[in-house]
Length: 340
Ligand code: PHE
Image 1 (cartoon, protein in one colour):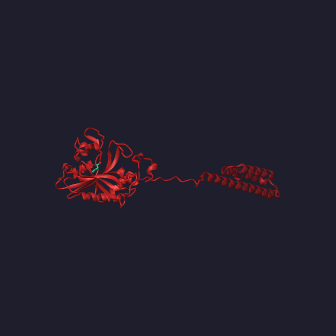
Image 2 (cartoon, protein in one colour; image 1 turned 135 degrees about the vertical axis):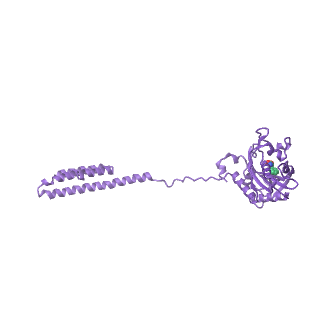
Image 3 (cartoon, protein in one colour; image 1 turned 90 degrees about the vertical axis):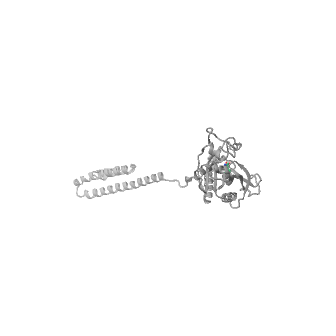
């Protein structure tokens, strides 16, 4: 009987030793120590032993049980520890890896500049108006005192869709739409931002670009109102030291007309490459609304006067940010756009 017990012990220890999972170890525990296990079965035969033999075999049985239990417990801890190590290795993260940057979107410089221009004029009491990009010849030219055979039409190389329909070459037709809608009410004070189209394509011209139109009509509007408004605009847009200069010019829809220059944003007027050593930068066209334009859109030019101006948003953005090629604004290259 003792021999049987020792054999069970040997077998059980060997099995425990080669077991690799908790499941296997549990099976071994049931097989040898369980209610129907081999140890129990052997012990059932104790009854047939003599009185002297019984305590000794009992002791051997206890030893064997303890031995097997100890071996199983030890192995269970070992297997658990091993599984833990495997799990830790699997879950390990490398905290030295660089993080994935969260990239934030932002406004395109043209959008940012357009909004800045709008905010300046909203602060001066102007409202925002809009008009179509596909226009009738009448709004783009005729109602702006540019009849069909007018030579000044050449100033704006036009994309025609039909003889009478075209892509607007400037935002000035919004002046006409606004006056038609508002006349004879006063005052009119609007700016009109939007896309315009001309057959032009080089480092400083693009077939599509953006303008902001301005129009103010009321009794007793004078040229000094125009000067004051544009001086404030220049200071707010380019800094309070910015000076403005009005040069006589010609537009069919304004009389008198003026090109407006600002003191160079690069050299503050001393003269540099950007301003071609003149100290001045041309930024917009302007003038007093031509009486004929007022009349055509329903205003009495004996009673009211007005001023108008139009500026190129790309040009303003290029000057403000020191961009030397207009096409950069349309390439959508993130290396460029991320700088703003
Ligand atoms: N529409 C003119 C242009 O595109 C600019 C302008 C607007 C001039 C209003 C005078 C008054 O060149």
